[in-house]
Length: 77
Image (cartoon, rainbow, N blue to C red; front, side, top):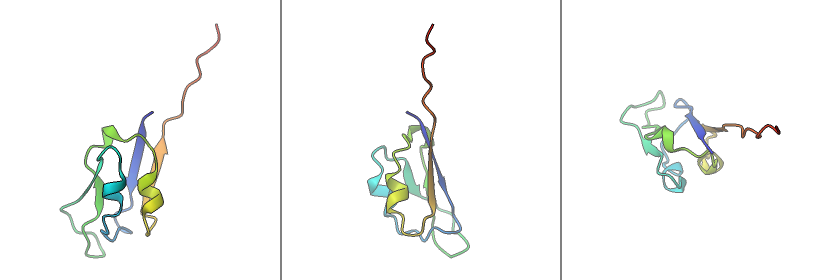
């Protein structure tokens, strides 16, 4: 299953809690500095995201949203 992770950089405080919980090592910390003065999280390899949602669950600032592609049912034929 394919997923997509979105980081709200303006809410991220750079705590890095999301980095080690990602089973596919998708998340890293950005070199950029956000409006709060922190290095926000970013998807370093977004194509590897499975949409598991562990990062969003652990984020204390609700700065992460995870989406999953809908599974398609095989049409009976």
